[in-house]
Amino acid sequence: MRKYLLIGVSAFVLGAGTMAYISPIAQATSSTKGQTYKMLELFGDVLQTVDAQYVSEVDNKKLIEAALDGMLTSLDPHSGYLSPDSFEDMQDTTRGEYGGLGIEVTSEDGVVKVISPMDGTPAARAGIQAGDYITSVNGQSVLGLTVNEAVKQMRGPAGESVTLTIAREKTDPFDVKLTREIIKPKAAIARMEGDYGYVRLPGFNEKATDALTAAITELKTKNPNMKGLVFDLRNNPGGLLDQAVGVSDVFLDGGEVVSQRGRDPRDIQRYNAKPGDLLNGLPVVVLINQGSASAAEIVAGALQDRHRAELVGITSFGKGSVQTVIPLRGGADGALKLTTARYFTPSGRSIQKTGIAPDLEVAQTKDQAQDIANRVWFSEASFKNALNADEGKTRVAPHTPAEAPPPGFDEKKGDFQLDRAIAVLKAGSVQAVPKLPKPAAKIAEVTAKAAAAAGKAPPVEKK
Image 1 (cartoon, one colour):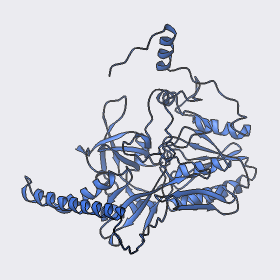
Image 2 (image 1 turned 120 degrees about the horizontal axis):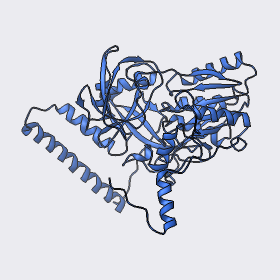
Image 3 (image 1 turned 60 degrees about the vertical axis):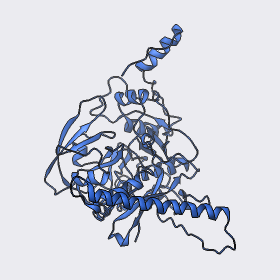
Image 4 (image 1 turned 180 degrees about the horizontal axis):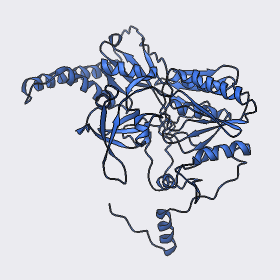
């Protein structure tokens, strides 16, 4: 049985037919197949030579698995080969309980990079951040390893410690010692913020929709005069498509949530919400940031397009591709994780590479505002072989965000983005909320403006 991360079944049927002549297309196809068989022969020759002449004895099974993974990861960052053990680990992850550190990671140029730490896990408590590089585990380098191989080193028996070496921009590499735990991601965290409800969803495992429904129902029961809801999807790395549709369905009264479109333009599958809005039209603000990815972006995009919620925060990660997990021999030989389609919001937007832009752009900290203004933020577009955006759009360039914490705001104790989300609910809309002064011009901007006023180009910084 296939397991689908994000978007479900994609069936490709090859038609069979008989032709009375060999057309140019058929000849080209035959030529292509001939070239493929020749390259497969070459692969066999290389494997045989390595097996016979490498300086030490090799494990052919590992070589072939690495070759399979290399073939698939050359397509895009999210395709890959899962060994039987990795396939089993993936199933544990989507079920919502497994042993490890609580980090969502990917691979970039042979380096393991953090997409997002998970709430309430050893990684989050240790201060590991989105965009961090993991260069070694327990003193052993993980450079050049596949994501699956690196993750295998990080996972282990609960209670045992593991030391990660972290490389982060603007700092020297440093070690972080963590203790492995049985990871049970909290499916929903709920509380009241004055007259407004607050629900945080850390991920989209198999329990996400039920947990969100239970959390909102409890808030409404205990607070019948609740005036609105903040739905927090920050640092939510995504998960299962059916849960993205289910979570959107909690807020929507029917209509389209998302569509997936494969290689064939006619291959379109649409997913719709059922009638009934659990909040009965109460206003909703969704919080997003650069760690909001995949299924989280489906939900944010659907609620934005359907005018059911307004978004506050910063532009999301931009993972708009669909992976189908295809077991091989029922999983006995592992599985393929293959990108088979892009997903589109109800208005027809593909957010691959570009991400979902908020209705009110708010940096969480003054340092984050500086980063957004002066460098390209880590996102799906950072990957050299990322699937292109379907409409040819590009991600927003470095710029000064609309809002950032004002002087005197305690960033350690306060949550500025949450404060602004509640302000939007109180005002009734992003358009109506009183705007804060735009953050002061950054050094790069001041230098450029001064140089323009003087009639000469700004000096070039050597790195």
